Length: 596
Image (cartoon, rainbow, N blue to C red; front, side):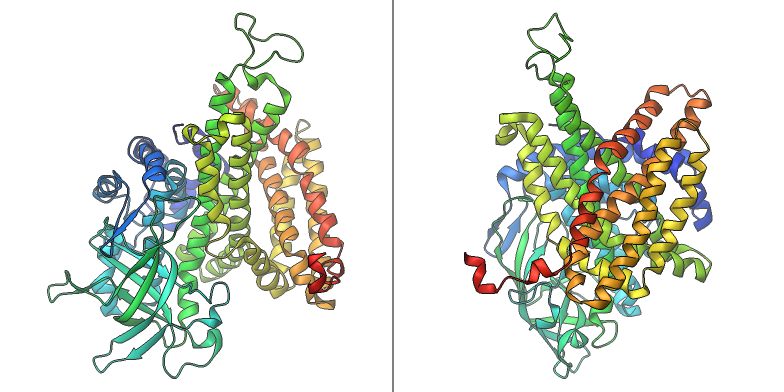
């Protein structure tokens, strides 16, 4: 298998669907269409030529821990050096510390490319960007001066240390302790597990952001503070010096993502510094976690695109049987399997889910950009509300899609999909973690219901539905799109009513919060993609009417939208029926009776 960035579709989403050049102008970024396309073309080359060739060997070789030091797979060191030297690491960093300040709408496309080329390689740099965000927003001036420029450049990397053996989702159970020292630093004692990039041989230093408790901390999540704990302490000249009292105690043995080191990290009196205010660590960390959850969603999208590319290439080449309506390739012993309806069902499902998620990812990135970069405070607040609503959907749905599309890829390959040498099964194994880390998808669904929908009585949700409905009316003016528009209009109206019903049900019975959450998130995602596919169809129709010389591309967009609305969107109905069934059938059975 090989990977090639879907540049044409990315350009369609960025330029035609969301006018990224106008978006950049609004943010005060000096990026025109030619510059953006040039960056994406270079990014595509880097992903295909430097990163993608690492993927297979990284799965076979994995990481190694010897004498307390982690070695990454062959080729990762050189690829990471090029990643830093060519400026990819600093793409999103703040200008004040040597970053390039690219908006998320542009950088997200590059990050998707990296994730499709080799998710293990991307894992090392992804959390560094989140570390930069958290430190830039909450760190003291001294910490920023000492660490940010090196993190932004990629010379140093960052991690996020939350999870402990007894404390996964429930961070109130954290035991790691931080003892104040006379010089203003802290000594940290404790262990963290599942730390991506906790140790590696790629960067000159590793900056751990660690959640821990102060001696006088109140119980629960209100007593958690955030600390910066470097692998190597800084010498007087600001360079990494002696080692800190921390280390990798073990590497986890995983079903996938084997090229990324997942470490048990032991802090044995390690020196660290407080980030933000005491007992406000969770709020500080959420700055990093929201970015991480968006990035994990892009991981699902990258995997989905890679699996679709592999499945499409195989379906065009694999000869099996004759078409049901007669031979399509009579000069060959059999027809390529892409002629068979069920194979096309799988390919079109892969294609429309992947491209639909790419549209929703760009829309979400736009909100993140406005939240942090709009000049109008009211616009920033509105974008923050919209981004908060969308992030759990992106994280959970995109990663579910990544797993489904990879599974369909295995199915397209038949027996060869089950064999390691063909590469498809690696995508399925690698994608599985994306549904688990940065908060399992069930936790994302609870977040969507409890904090985002119930939190404001579905006001933000209904506001988004109103905006989408207005765009539907524009599409309805075109007779060719009228049937599609009617389908989406009805679905949006149902979504609004369903949201109100969910709010009322949860008010009556708190068990409904957990009972409806997963199905409501999936329902919301399918309907969101439907509205975006209708917008894509509207743009495609305009291009065709205008006599575009890319008629085949735009016709495929119309056909993809039609397939999605007729063959994928009906899934939303099943989720609606399930969540309306109520919580009683989930909670009625006694715990002891599960064994029968």
